[in-house]
Length: 459
Image (cartoon, rainbow, N blue to C red):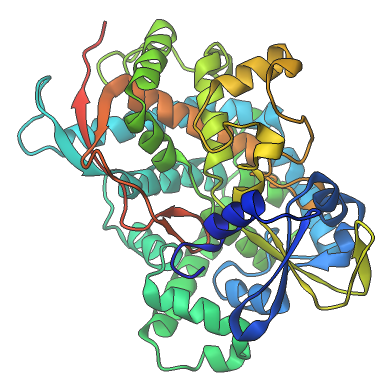
């Protein structure tokens, strides 16, 4: 499981091991784990009995070293309060006003990739790049503008202190993963004192980012409130609510910084499926200006919504490659799941990678990348050989602990992918490349994604 990743292993087990919705297995030191994989079991854990299950204390203490106790880690009444006052900032009516910014950052990304070629990339020249590095830089800049109301300049300058610190803390290496495992086995006070360079780096990086967040809050307080509702970033909305102390606001800002984009996986699947890539480019070119050569009119949410194939591809990417492969809960009291007794302190694994790839829920082609499934289930649900349920698409979870930023994430991905496909033809550097999923806060290819891109001309 360490080598292949828990999401991949649980997907394999859910599809091959007979089960009634719960799979029991033994983890390190023969510790019991229960993976819930059926809609009925997921409904109980995520919705009907959601407050019987919380994130494990070891996990919360470990990740809180980086994120603080923001929305991602808070529980109970604290979580309810935080979610209530942050919801307006993530409502679609507010997020849709960010689409022009999403598009501006997306065009900045593809322009920067083109400009990074020392040979002045021409129409017949392929350029080799690593996608995840560029995707992370774009995501950081989008979070900066949409979450904080300022540019982090990561696309143009990946070595500025903020960008460098962000990469160091949110892209852990082997030592970071080892400390994560030890955090489940040893007290956190002991893990923090182990003589690992990673421990010192995490402390310095976290202090730097929290200091940056603190200065951003102070700067916003000194400025007059001149923004209209449509121009407000997420931090400003949270500040205006009056529900958060400065330390609470810093925790929320650190949580925003941990957000991930699925652009890397989207580029991967389109490089594997050139005909889909070509069809998507045709749709994009019929609606959008060339992302580098033609400024064109402002791109809005209404513009993006005119491209159903783009929507279908993005949804299918998020289904097959959810950024969070597995999330963990622990029973805080004796309870049941689908009539099965669950003792207090039992660890529960919720695996979006397994559920999103389950043939019983998605049909016989569940493991295949098939954007058409979204079109046919929208028009005619009976046309798909899948069982429609609210719990078959688990990328953003469900219930009171569902991802509050799903509209933001979807809009960001659609704009980034539209700009990428509109600007480049992409193929894998190694046609036989099979990604190994790297663990961490989010799932990504272990050794990055190396592709060749060739610019495409404006029509």
